[in-house]
Length: 323
Image (cartoon, rainbow, N blue to C red; front, side, top):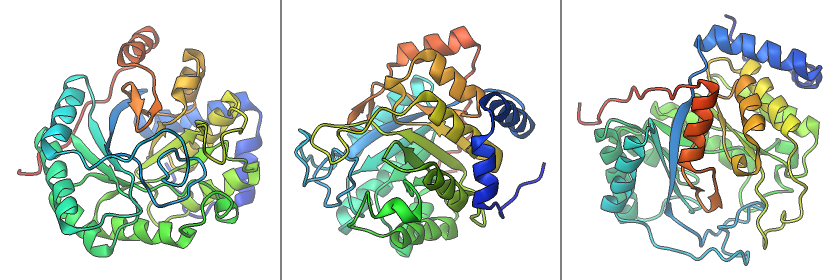
């Protein structure tokens, strides 16, 4: 299988825009060649520090400047987080993701707590992922030393459209953190959001940024915007299933070895729509009733869907940090 890093926007647009059945067939063929099966990784996401964020991401209910009803809360204790991680593991999660509503980690005490959380999750035999905002080089290296498996830092959209969505940081800031993560040896989890008001060109350009990285992200989350009252994007139209399928299928073709994650927005999708996304190459989902501060399908619903479709959860391969 040829893994390319030289995709042009014109090539990506041609893939994205082809007849849907042809696109899904090409994506499924690529997926089978790269993965050999249709197993799906179950990931659990916990908000370890909610609300009060100083950033102005137009889609985010955790921004302090928006009146969304989300209250700022303190960082959870290590014990509380590891208790949630153990429950997620017992329910079938192979990766436990921890999200903090920060511009970036501040203060040694809180960051040390996060490092302890990472070590504890790894000692439970799970992959550990964090999304903590922008990192310094030293912070990335400390997370790597604690055994972090992956770091999530989405680019959200194209460089051209980015400043229409976020003004408190730049695209270059995002790429700098991703570079620190990659250099530290931690896997990169990086994707974007569909439904922000972007064009097809913006979607294809965002995918080009990811697919032309020297190393493709190991995980590529594809999120459908979940509108929240009080945010600037509260009146955006719902994302159509076909748009999600096209994004997932195109990502699968461009980055065959990446886990393509069907992320935010699943609660607004039918079972059939979710299965079509998986047919198009999605092999990772977040499960659990909440996705940070927005609703997500319940565990029982997901397991029932998997049972009906004959989908198996991907087994964990993480080793404890102490070994």
